[in-house]
Structures are given as C-alpha cells and as structure tokens.
Amino acid sequence: MTDTTLSTQESIFTSTARDWSSDMTTFKGVPWGKAMMWIFLLSDTFIFTCFLVGYMVMRMTVTEAWPVASEVFALTVWGVSVPLLLIAIMTFILITSSGTMAMAVNMGYQRRKWAVFWLMLATALLGASFVGMQCYEWSKLIIDEGIRPWGYAPDHDLGAPQFGSIFFMVTGFHGLHVSVGVIYLITVAIRVVRGKYDHTNFEIVEITGLYWHFVDLVWVFIFAFFYLW
Image (cartoon, rainbow, N blue to C red; front, side, top):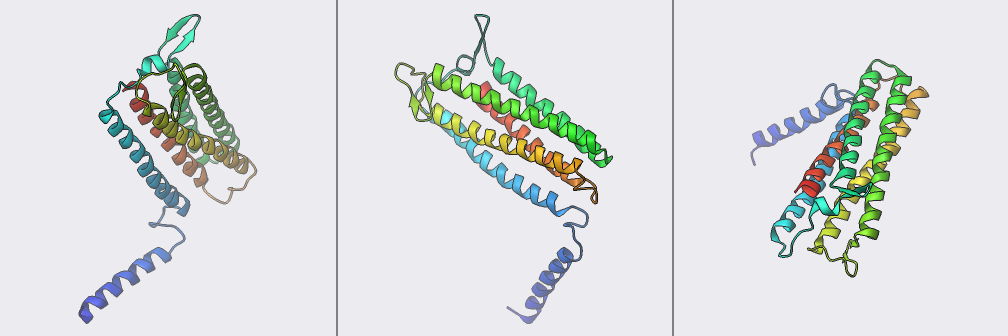
C-alpha cells in the first residue's frame, strides 16, 4: 500500500471523526436519541423479518393441513361464531393508538405538556387493552382449543403441530414489545408533565412515537400473515 493511499485513508477517517465530533447531534441536526432509536428499530426489523420469513417457509413446506384461522380465532357472541372478531378489535385498538400517539407528538412540539400527558396516557391505555385481549386470546387457544407451543392437547388435533410454536413465539415477542412500550409511554408522559424535558424541544415524545408506530406496523404484518393467510 502506497503512502498516498495511506494518507487518503487517514484523511477520510480523520474527516469522519471530525464530522461526528463537531456537534452534539448526529447527522447535523438529528438528536442522538432519535438516531439510536432508528438503529434499534432497524435491528428489530431484522428479527421480525426472520420470524415471518421462517413462518412463510414453514407454511409452504409442511405436509399436514394448516389450521383454518377463521375457525381457530373465531369468537362466540350470543351463540354465534364470528370469525376474527377479537383480532379485528385488537387491530382497531392499535391503529387508534397510533393516532393518539401522533397527536401527542404534535402537542409536544407545541410544548403543551398536559395535552402530551393525556394523549400518551390514552395511548398507553389502548396498548394495555391490546395486551389484555391478547392474554384472553392465548387463554382461549390454550384452554378451549387445546393449542400448545409444543403441539396439541389430546383430542384437539387441528392439523400441523408447528402452528402453536410459531404462533406463540411471534405474537408473544410482539406482545412483549407492546408491554414494554406501555411502560415506556407512561414513564415519558410522567416525566414530560413534571418538566424534565422543558429544556428540550420535546424530541423524546417523537422518539417514543417512533417505537410505538413500529410496534403498530409490525402488527399489521402479523395480522396479515397469521390471521388472513
């Protein structure tokens, strides 16, 4: 390697370090917290992508019949079996929570702390409702339908035994994200109303919104793959 090449590489590294250290924000205006959240969400995207791709491969390669979603996830109302009713309500709740979160971000940049607090609290309550409904869904599948992560209970054979393992793993991992998001929302909302971010432009509300919108977006794919396919 010539001296000219070494000098060029050194100048590239030096200029890169100078650019990153010349300011307290990344990319000349993007807060560090937002940049780190994007990096975290990118890594999380890879994980969910691996889960969903693995699910697709499993669906296309199993030799046994896959359980029918409209039957497995049906909810009985007044003696009538309604396909995917509970899942539709859960999806509506998450989509609504995205709207309240977006309004919270807007209120944050207007520095209206109490509006931010109530909107983030409403978002957290919607998220907690989603988790509660998911717990009910799981209990119904385990107790009534006999679906287990390792297969089926006796006399409850619905088809491919892999269904339970992939379903509980993916929806459970997403439910964990929602649960963490609820705690995150409540924590940030309390800190906002206590004035912990008065010296900032309330970027933390937008950063929290990035996480929550990501969780909602992932659910759209889970809904399409597990409940509609």
